[in-house]
Length: 121
Image (tube, rainbow, N blue to C red; front, side, top):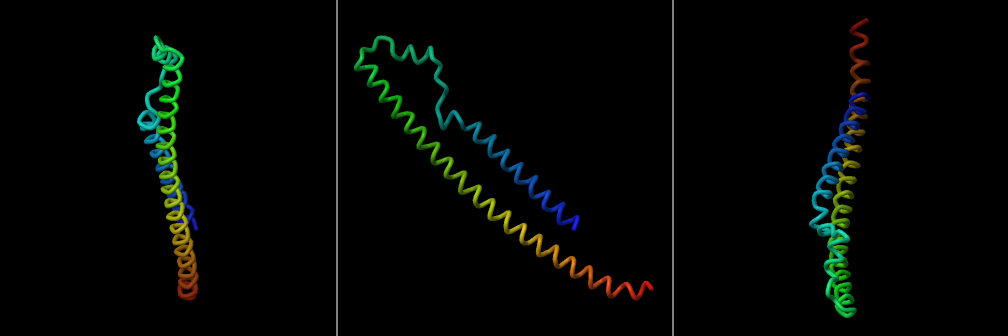
């Protein structure tokens, strides 16, 4: 029974490590997904010398870039979701296998006790 708990704890640790690695990877790829952070001073410089029509065009361009970034983010989130679902299925399978193994170990232990106990007495 303790082995079962240890195995489950080990699997949980591995899941947490994978999630942590995935979060680090996503954080590192933030700039590639969302683009570099634009500071207010940079935004003001982009509008210098533009008339109203130019500012509207710039706003449309910015919205288009944001839409593209959101599409990339959606693809990443969808991909991450599929990976998480696959990991969850794999964990469920491992838990069932460990439970099955634990049950077989208990049955074998009981049989050994029945066989060995009379010999000890």
